Length: 214
Image 1 (cartoon, rainbow, N blue to C red):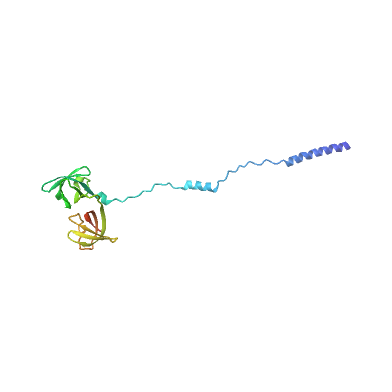
Image 2: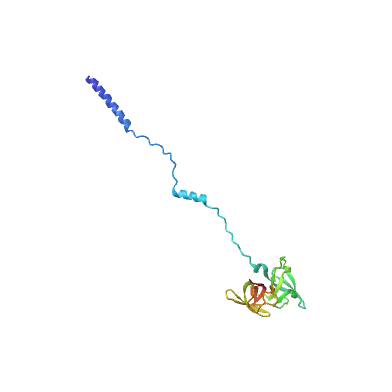
């Protein structure tokens, strides 16, 4: 009987050891199947790429320069002048020769002689043909020419001169010797609203066109 008890005790101890090994074994961790979360900065960047509108280059509107497109200075050298002074030939700086009758120029402010350099203020013809341009004023040549436009109210108006005051307070005087003008543009001694396009020669202002103001 004693051997039997010893044998049973050995069996019990062995069984207990096996059970303790089984209970003490750490289970394997389950695989992580969840997708990685996006960071806040990544989400915002993605949203910006999705919602960002297409960028198109801006366009700048350039106003038309009336003075430079309608009026110009024809400059050159007189190569021939008729003895009676009725006409002359001008070799212009553009390389062309023009035969011009003095009667075709509204106002002549210079001597017309051979080898003299002159400049003629011209108004372009609608066709664009330089031979059909209107010759307004002939001047002695000078280094630079500026064609300007000013609007104002007349403060005086005489036979061949008038003066305007602009909205910024400037007073400008003009010599109006046979220049193109709108009908009724200058009807009173003062108080008329006018728009004047002009060129300056020898400190005097010569209108190329007088328009009725608003």
